[in-house]
Length: 269
Image: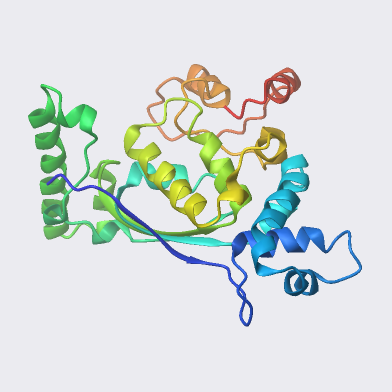
């Protein structure tokens, strides 16, 4: 069964007794760093019709100039249904996003799986659909034979449907946005991320404006780039161990030259 993901911005940080949204909390917090009044005092003393412009200017002159902690002072929570396990791998890579994900042990064949349009429209669509259906059938048979679901689930493909609740601030969502542009991120993954950012941006556009330094790669905690054929660490490990017949324990450190090159090129892969 072909099902599409449903992404909904579920909740955002807001004032308890004051009409402050995520970008207000961040902007007036930054404003308060340079004024005698507190952030709340500045918010209350700024006329309501003047606040949107003030928010834009302050965010541009703070987060936009590389003060990343300003974009930390907020939170967006998303409820996402019917996304693929492949998409959750991407969501879970940045360190400062938090998740509550449905267990793979809850997967059943009648709940379906997702396939991108590029496969759906290809001549091999029926073959792909049959392959995924067969994996679910085998999973069910293993479960019926008493194999624990936590073991049987390893047969299930990354296009298996799942649900997840994801929370994070604008700074890490911008990081996720940029990760979406690196490597060869599948459309089933990039669609979920793009929709999340679009919904958050619609709610609070100034937090996600690209002023340059707020999208500086070196300002984020480095994240693994799962969907990149240029992932040098992974490629070095594959080259060294090839296809071992048994489980291999290894330790791997990037060389100094590799680190320098990554920093110089601002390339997380």
